[in-house]
Image 1: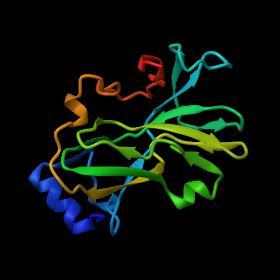
Image 2: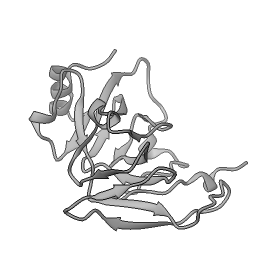
Image 3: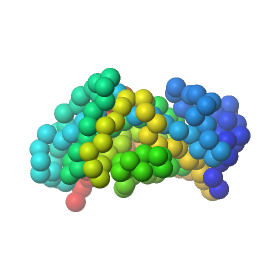
Image 4: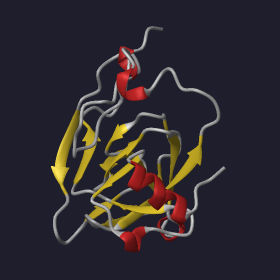
Length: 178
């Protein structure tokens, strides 16, 4: 079951959902709009290795925006820090963003119950397009979880993305055993 706007507000009041900064104008019928933070990152190496730590170069988006180009992975970050303690949050790109040929999070749309952080965005573009910090980029949908939870993300021993940050985070695949 997806939460409505009034239910999202109730859960914020209860403390099971946190969005910082929160702006009621960003609350939709059944979602909350999030914005592109001020940092982007790109991988330093052209060839990425799933078993290695692939380092990134992080930079700030200038006031005049930045043009992204096809064929490259850009890591962005949401301006908003979120905590979701009883629900599953899904992040989807806004339709207006998609209509510009911008794709965010093609593979990592769902946040585990207990995810407490900003959202790293895997951004790709179909053609050159200029992005700006603070522009609307996506929307969070919240789904109710059935059953008891015993393995919250923010207390899992092997959770890889728990350090609070306002910058994009590179892949931590290399920490997996395979």
